[in-house]
Amino acid sequence: VQLQASGGGLVQTGSSLRLSCAASGRTFSGYAMGWFRQAPGKEREFVGFIRWSGGSTYYADSVKGRFTISRDNAKNTMYLQMSSLKPEDTAVYYCAADRWRSSDYSPTRAFEYLWWGQGTQVTVSS
Image 1: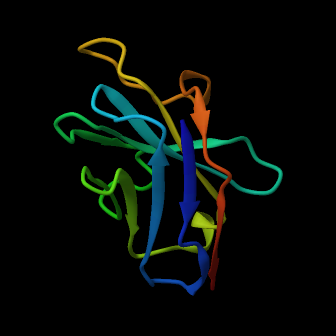
Image 2: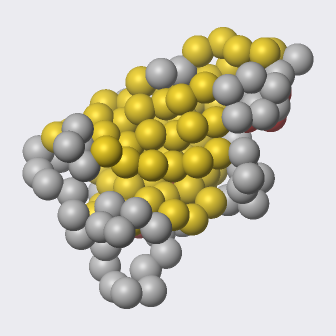
């Protein structure tokens, strides 16, 4: 499995930005795909995930209502639409994937993901 994150950049507070995560190597039905972020000097933080089959999503409280995860089956690509960006959203954003393990699976921790993309920098200026 290979994941390629892209779309980061420098934006102003209140702006919107869409990140992409292009996945290859297999079909992703039966997989969870997540977004994490890591700011300098801080631990990697869960942002949200999507269950590829069905498209159900789950978000961290810090981004709920501002960020939306979606996927395009035909393109094998996951997206993170970010709106109302704040300076505290500044971080390197990573996409990750792993198999959906059970009906009540809720992968919010980094160690639950086996495959990772390389990260894309998002900087929100005040």
